[in-house]
Structure formats: structure tokens, C-alpha cells
Length: 523
Image: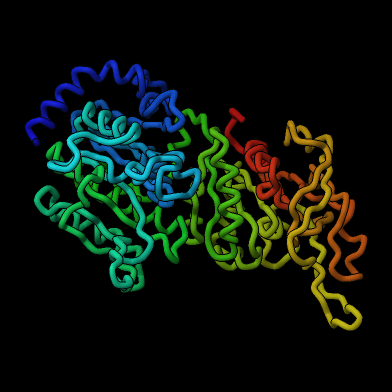
């Protein structure tokens, strides 16, 4: 059976030019300078997905990194998206961040619309005495591409739903493989896997969340097992854990393991675990966005912003935790975004040092977008404010008859309010109606602060209605600024009180705002 598979491999290689015309489309176009090129797997199909190739031009290993085979495991996909930018010194690095684009878009493990036998993409690859060939269009296209590239290594990035070390499944259920390195002891270097394990565990403080090695190898008919048992090459599945951990934590763990692996292989000559984007010296056709995703930021808000940014091909978003708000990290990006939640908790999480990093980032030409809580954060009102835009916030407490003292910033649950774009706002948000309903949930009601050193802001939109929970709030919101833009040093700031990213048909306002404050001269 293995002999027949090798013959099939040779047959596939001989006919690959036909396949490339029909499905892959190997004509590559420049993505970044002359180092990073891209093509499409499944060109012209509804599941086509980018392949990124970085060829050093120096003899060395060919390494393939895949992510997003399961659509409810986004951290592997996002880590791969960042890994494609790493500056290799030899060999060829091939990254396919979104293998299963439809499943990722649906946030579902299985391929949408696939028949039952094909729905789990990572059970469709060859294995001796089980599958002689891959099953289904996506697995076949990916497998044939691997056959053509003949990689020396494959790393498949995944996520488990629970920590393997502490998971106690109910009777009859498998134990989750979250936070593990799944490898084959006969095909992998013990030193390398031990160092990968150590690099991941350096980022883990709780003993019950530590990473473990699983050396019995990947499950049969997975992509990694096919590489091991059919191609005879080393492969690993790297699993982080979705439960109780935000995306920045999981992507950092993936990057740590992959950076260690590529250093050990000799492809990298330095640790790249904190490389998110290409160098500023390169020609950048993409705006690189840092999205704050940690304490104080609403998870739903982060999800809505992520979806809005992902929908624009000109933006690439990375999720950053509070401890990743450092100068050497932010300087890789064009724009930083703080979304809804609690502005004071966001400020507390990033701390005084993080606040200064954000201010310097904007002062030196970076862009800042603040939505709701992020708009409170960038104001010039509170002791914890970033003081990036000259906004005073309506706040404080008022005595409400029969109810006691009530906070004036709080106006209750989410509602739809009317918002009207100004002439300047229509230029920024081209194509949007001048007046429309937008979701609002306790965003700041602002006015000029006249803070020393800050220039007056420009109003991009006005509230034309208001949400009133208590009588003293009447008349305090209507006809006040909903969105303002200001300059801070060499950078630009947009403060957005409502939630267009969560409003049907107006999600694209957020990418438009990013482009308006980006320091990338192409936008």
C-alpha cells in the first residue's frame, strides 16, 4: 500500500502543472518587497485561500506551517498569519494561515456544507491501509501542494477546548489535547521538542495549564500523520487551549513554540516570538492593526472589531494583551485600537508604562482608534486618561428623586440612536448615509476640554437623538459629538462613542477610521 502511494506521489508530481492551472494557480505575485510572495490554493473556488512563500535564496530546509484547518481554532490561524513575516536566513518558509476559510468565517470546527464523511477536514488525509488518497477538494488540493513542495518539516497549528494536563472528561469521552505538542518520537528531535515545550511553558504560570509532550504521534488520517507516515517526513501538531485564555495568550504560545523550532532547524538566527508584522523599511500594502484584547476589553466587542477588520483585505489585525503593549511591539503597527468594555480597567491593565507607550506611539506618527471604552480612554478627562484628544466627558453623579445618587455616564442597555455625519465625516466614511441609526451603549458624551497642549478636535458625526435613563440626563446627549478626530504629535486619533462595528451595514466604518489615522502613506 505504501509502495502504491509513492507511485501515486510521482504521478501527481508529473501532472502537477495541470493541477496548478485548474486549482492552485502557481503564478506568484509580490506581497512584500521581493521576499514574501503569495499564491492561492484552490484558485477560483469558493474555498480558495492564500499561501505565503518566503524563499531566502539560501540552501536550507523547506518548512510548511498550516493553521485554521478547524474553524473554531482561530489562534493557530492568527499565529500563522504573523509567522509568515519572520525574517528567515535560509531555506523556504511556506505558510497557509487559513486552510479552511469557510469554517473560520463561521467559527465552526467542521467545513460548512460538507457531507458527513468530509466535514472534519483533518480526517481526510492519506494513511496506510485506511485512505490511499486524500478525500474531498480541500484536502486533495492541500495534499497535492505538499507533494509538490516535498517539505522537510510540517507544523500544523491547532487549539484544544481544555487543558490536557487537568482535563477530566466524562466517561466515554476523549481527553482534550489542549496545550500539548503532538509528535512522533521516531521522527522528531528530542532536544527540539523539549525546547519548544520549555518555551511554551515559560509563558504559563499555572501548573494545571502547562504544556505536555504527546509522543505517540498525531491521529491517523490527519495532515500531520500523512506527512509522517506517507512522506516519511517529520511533522507536529501544536495545540494551545481555547478555554479561559484570550487570543493574545494563545497566539503568543504558538509563536514561542514555532520560533524555538525554526531556530533549532536553523531557519532563524534569532528569536522571533514577538514579530507580528514585516519591518517598516519594507513596502507595505497592508495596514497593520494592533487590537487590544485583555482585561477591560469586552470579548464581544473584540469579536465585532475583529470581524470588521478581517472583512477588509487591506487590513491585518493582531491581538495584543496588556503585557504586550510595549514600544518594540507597537512600533511594528500602523494603528492601535481599544474597543468597548471599561476604559478605566483598560487603563489599569496597561498601567502607567503602557499608557506612555501608547502616547509615544501616536506622538511619533501612529494612529489610535478608541471605541466606547476606548473613547473614554483616549479622552483628556480622567486621571487615568491617555490625553490624546481634547474631549471632556459628561460624568459625575446627580441626585435622582426617589432613587438616590446616579452616575450620569450610565444610560442603560444597548439602544439604537440617530447619528449624522458631518461633511468631514462623509469624507472619512465615504459611501455611508449622512444620517442613520447606530448601536449605542453608554459611550462618552463629549465636549471640548481645552486641555493644555491639545489641539481642537474635528467633529465627524453628531448624535441626533439621545438615550435617557434619569431625568437629569435629558438634553445632554442630543446634538453632541458622536465621533471626533484630532491630531496628537505626528499621529491621528479618532474617538467613537457608539458602536458602528456592531451595527448591521455599518461595520465598514471601522476599517475606514483605521485608514484615516494610518501612517501608511498608501492610505
